[in-house]
Length: 560
Image (spheres, rainbow, N blue to C red):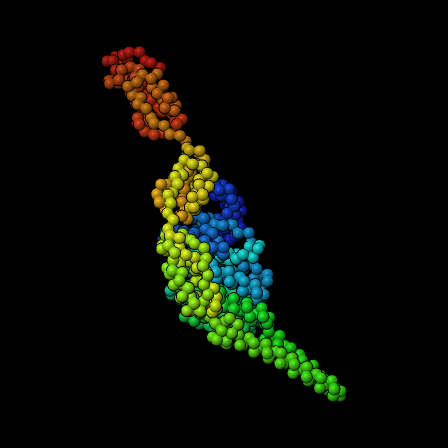
């Protein structure tokens, strides 16, 4: 399908991905002159009209998500039987490829990737969008280490098709939550379960459940317990393992309540391991065992002095190891009493409060507060909290600072009129006036290429700053229209002149007798007067030869 042009705008260059649900192409947006990725649904998914409608609706909802860790969706369309999504082109690799090469992966890299995916999920969940298909194949890593989560909302349209479409989609079931496998209600915690399975695979190089067919794997998610990753790979920080097991708990109520809560735990794990190292338990145990063996060897020697010295060394090593273990235990146990800043508190909802009210509430709940920048908000009254840096309802360490941005009120402005302007000029006008460019559609028109034909919302109306303006642009390939003149009743020469003046061409001229029109006058024209035609179209006419006489001859001269 390479070199095919979709919507007269997206030129497919090469296939860059092939999945069970869709094929992904690198493409070029000829209108905006940029490279993009186009995901084209496989034909078996497009036979069901309700599925196609769900796919379109969910993809358009996902297009509203804007976050550094989410693959941007630019457009959703259909051409013939081809349903496609236009997305941001990512210069990087899938996490599945990285796992295949690097797993078991370093725990620090696992924490970093998980935190970024959780950040993307947090934004989606706050917008009431559940991913439903978190897996390594849907996670991209750019060359600078930025994580990008793709395919938001698409799995909702797929519904249970993942289990029945064929072997190419079997991979998804390895990351299904038990409630998905049962076909029950899913929520934010279902995405967290899937992320827990991804963490497990990064740490061990294996998924916890596998089988000969998707149904077998699904049943294992429902019925079998996950083997702790430390039984497969050593050196995993215990708290990180507990985090994985909490994410992948079979019961939704036992998992993290939000992606933000998972992020907080990951921050705590990173804090601890920076102090004592990632393999403190294993290193301590190994050191004790090694020194014990050394001591046993010395016991066999006759030199009592060396034996005594080795015994003292052993006691010192055991003491150090015990102190390290005690330090870690104190950290986690002491979270409830504030040791190492680990006392977690639920972040209060400060939205709509004055700064004084927010300060009082935050202080009472054990947090510090800081005034950020003012922001325009159509929903929040002036000088009241419109945004807060720590999400309400999530847990953060006591003493953490909440930065609040106070509302500057609604800053409604008048939308600029873009009709008739060139695309490049319109883009600058939109940005200058504090608005955003929305969906850009290209249609065939006689107007010069790049001319704005329509805009939504229309110009001249009031709208809040930041409103997206969708525009329709001419491709410049349309033909100019002309109005067909009245030709009947005119002489042939008059008719020819009228056709030429209107921008058309004279077509076939035929002759026939008429009892109404005199000889040499046009009595029929191919297109009705007043109708609209592309200029340059030929128009056939019929000219009267006058009345036919009784002997079959024609009265009058014929004008040719």
